[in-house]
Length: 264
Image (tube, rainbow, N blue to C red; front, side):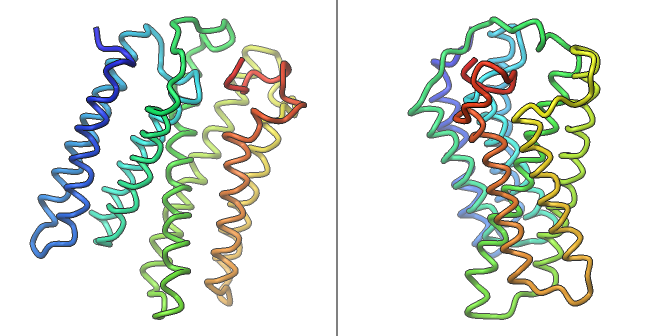
């Protein structure tokens, strides 16, 4: 039975494929090979997630380490999609770097992955709610990396309209999934606790994150919007997202009161 102890071998295999794909993307006529190699690495990583799911006899979405698995997987998927759609050679390098960073965090800071799942999480809403949110987080992470790259490049050259369009598309898709995740969470809360919203710290920061990205979308829809303020808004919204994902674990108000704290 494959368990967390086997993760390093899957991680190494996936990282080799991702790095090879990122390198091939920079070569002439290497686009097809880059996509296939990157997809192979992503499938290897997904294979481990599926095996861990079987081993734990529950969805691997309970601990922070398990959510990092999904983040690494989805950011790799998004890198491949963006490269396939817009042909930006650098995006595979960045998605590879981000996926490997989160993978290394899991290797350096392993967590105890027990089979136990609290009753509140034994719901049909659990898997789609967490999966949708992690995909949204990965989309927003990709958009933020894109924005930082464009901001850095803007001192040397003008930002191309298609580059901002790609960034906007990532944010809009991510925001749609954030919205879907919030709706699912509200329906789940109603079913489990009898109310849609309780101003739990996670819920509060999720709402702040949702509004942050909505401000970006609204600003970018204005004909007179400029790139630099848009990127600042996007980076600020991403900081809110990090507070929503990681930061609430350190809030005194969340300790012992929030189901969303990973160290419970």
